[in-house]
Image 1 (cartoon, rainbow, N blue to C red):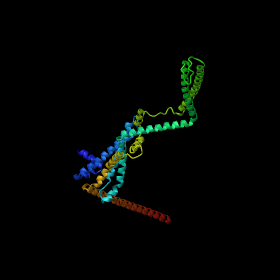
Image 2 (cartoon, rainbow, N blue to C red; image 1 turned 90 degrees about the vertical axis):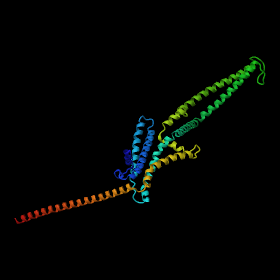
Image 3 (cartoon, helix red, strand yellow; image 1 turned 30 degrees about the vertical axis):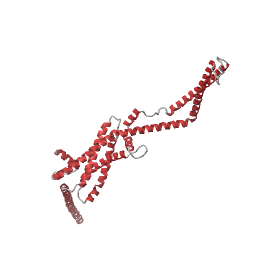
Image 4 (cartoon, rainbow, N blue to C red; image 1 turned 60 degrees about the vertical axis):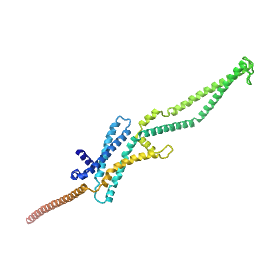
Length: 371
């Protein structure tokens, strides 16, 4: 238990040697340290999950996710520890709030960053559904665009093909009707189109000739239609229209499984809106609640430090800081005094040396002049 307490003290950024002297402050800094630790833990999970989707499909995805998660968690831990540890309880409440405001803004940004990947995991099922709809609609637009371009490019051939199909259908109906009338003529059925004379006579031969002409025409039309269909199918193949089809259910599942972080993040944002463009309040509140929860969790150590009254540990820490500042000032004064004395000694030594040189030079010059 003592080791765990000391660990959370370390997480809080407290000066442990001083904190140990004031038991009443122990629980407060255990709570602050635990909050920082679990914030870093959530950040590690969040960063690892995000990196897993960045390298999704790679055999190294899990390794990269674990490595990045650890690095990201340690970075957030170090930053939170510095933020909380750098807030002192000196000055008025307004001064403390002003001092902590940049750190609170930074904590809000960190909370937003670490909450987003976890939101992606929480709304994973809904995101997959939104991605499937998006991919299917995108494929439909692609098919419609290709079909429109194909129709505009070969409008004349398509129109001619349609006319031949209409003629083929009309000839087929006429042939069936003429064949029925021929049978009536041969079997002697009396109607407004037949003579009522049984046998293969003059009228039957005439109807047989008309039927044969229509069949020959149908053969010509069908041959031309087959050629045109072959040509149009060849053009479809060349323009890639035959290769583009709507995704099946299994294909949509596969695409949703390998979707990247950007696509999933976009889909998460789209969940807040219905198909008609209006805001989905329930989903919006759910996502906002999760984001606000992590922002509050990230800001909690700073807020606890600000809300807590100035305790014995804070007073002692302030005295230690004052003593350290005083020691630094005295150490500076000592260094300045030593430097001055050394400089004065060097100056005196240099003056004496130059005096001896000048005296020696003057004596030499006098000796030379007497000679």
